[in-house]
Image 1 (cartoon, rainbow, N blue to C red):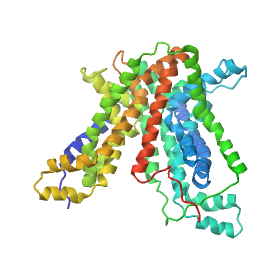
Image 2: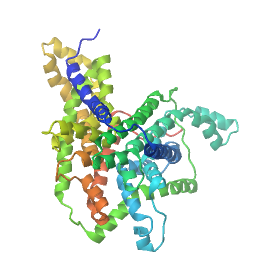
Image 3: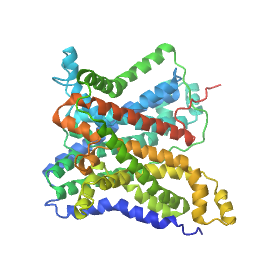
Length: 508
């Protein structure tokens, strides 16, 4: 039987903090005048529709691109993989903002070319934007599944006379359905929790209406809407937990060598996605920067973002250390880790609504940086826990045992052996938290102190005021910061020996 770990009490306390937002929402919702009305039905319909269309669009785009990057021998394969995964490096609200400004009557495209284009708004616009920025979830999960498959079955099917398309459809597709489902559920979760895209494009979803109710001082109704949203989030998380990874005996991955013309046509077919998701937003920001310059942007906004993100990263790592150690030491610790992950499934707008009530009850916290940092920690703690735990689990336990045998206490063994050897995971986890906090919009809008403007909130204020040209610098800064997050993600995969950028061995 394993000893009771000293990290358990701290992990239990952190788990209680993670549960707090849900408990607060239940208390607030008790004062709501009604549980459900016809307006809620419209909001529910819009939210479910956006979730389904996003998942479907992500699958339609992501699966062919996964086949392309996994099986086709492309020139500069690493470049194409990074380019096609790059929409992960752009917050969806930036894509929504620039596409909204570029298309439609009076948009940037009409201004420059005189060509009238359809508007990007409502359910259609939101679904297109969300699919463009979530398809990498499907592409990367399906690609990982494809690379784990043994190509011998496909080769056997081809030998028996099946065409390449038929063999992919009949042999490969049934074996990657779990990977497709996992990626689609991630896209659906993102669509449920996103605030910026439906808010900018005028679609009444739960996240947008929670913000509207909060601004109209309807905190109890905002809490009721938040709980209804959490029910859907919980259902998606449950379905995701039931999806199992592909398990079969590993073998040599399939490699296709199409001619130059076919390869060029396949890459050309993927370009509309790259143009809409990456090139167009950067071009719009570049146009605004050239046309209007810096506007009234101040470097203070970037400093505020970095300042809050740094505190959140440090606090998240300090919280993550006992949770990760507890998870390694036993079943109770793993349970506490699961509970602490609750915050990552709570949308930022919901987290902000719950913590506003906490701030109202404790006036010393209301509209302070402390409360804002607490929201960040509760939202992104799982990123730090995952990075720290994955590093700590690979440590040789005999090193700690040897230290204990030589007379070191638990505390000293942790300080002199476990902690130094976990530095890589600590740095990776804190960097991911830092970069995610820099992008966070809804929680910052609700909880930020007075006159505390960040890059994300400044971008939102510019949108609300209609001064689109002034969004260039904060938008470009957020894209660069998000690109760093993507680079860290890929580098982290290399640390874990699951480097998605590594080239597959060729067929001999």
